[in-house]
Image 1 (spheres, rainbow, N blue to C red):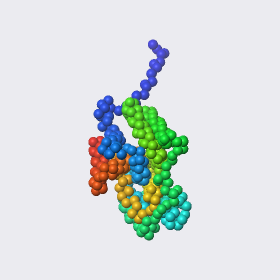
Image 2 (image 1 turned 45 degrees about the horizontal axis):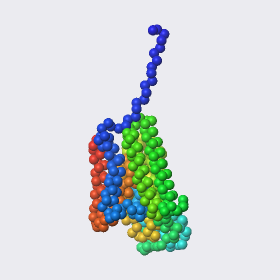
Image 3 (image 1 turned 135 degrees about the vertical axis):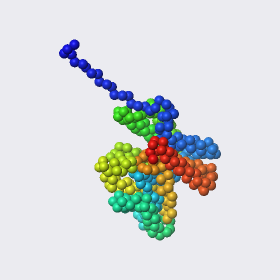
Length: 409
């Protein structure tokens, strides 16, 4: 009929993709991200079964793992950012030693207040990061060479500051940074209710964050996992977190160093996922030429990456010297290898552009659980090194395999 207009119905947007209909394909596609979590659960369960009286998951041993490997996890936060940008830092162990030595010299040697030592250590770490960032970002020397030189340079400064002798002990307040606990804030119940409260808060924050991320992906028509699998993952994480909180609540309470670590993890997760700086780091590591063409100030970003690494190495130095109750000339030996291993085992790519803070944390915890479990079993130190080396090799081999399967050479 003339004079009538055709009303066109609006086409509804396509439903968000929820992964492959084949469960095996879906699992394979997400193995790179989920494999480390599966491996962690398997390793924890294995040591729980084979240690006497299930000692590996006793409240005291879980507390010991957190205290013993906290400084490695702090280093791993900075190291994964360095690796995502396509660099490496071999000097962090020496920076840990030097910052701890500076703090000990001021507090123990010269009698200054404990907080003066902490501020001085942080200042030295930031200056070291700026020094190395200058050579990498503005002079153009590869980070491998700059930080290899730094490893030797800062170890020498450590020997100079300490005059080749150890300094101890620190005041009680300084020692609480790594060995103190928060206990009894909500009264006595036979366990620390405050630790359980923090566990609940952590679970709620994790669940809310995951739901917000999922909604954002749905909004932009990105692939999301099936809802039952999504809920199952949150439930499993919640169970693990609350189990750890329950163990800590029945031991000595909430370690202060765990609070420090949690704040760092949350802050850097937000920085890497939700800020311009974080996106630029991924862009530089993923495709340097494209990042430059898109207007990223590569020199500035690289400079601040190493400043940040120096700061976190100083935090690790404070934690380690606090736990050791002093400073030693040989402190920090091998820490750079532990941090690098944590990042790669946690899913960081050798070529850069890929890696997450939470992955590095799981990688560091995996190394810590393996080391702790082998110590509980009385395995010889030489064999422990062999096993940890094989774990790192297999993790990197898995990364290479995934890239080849995806057509990347």
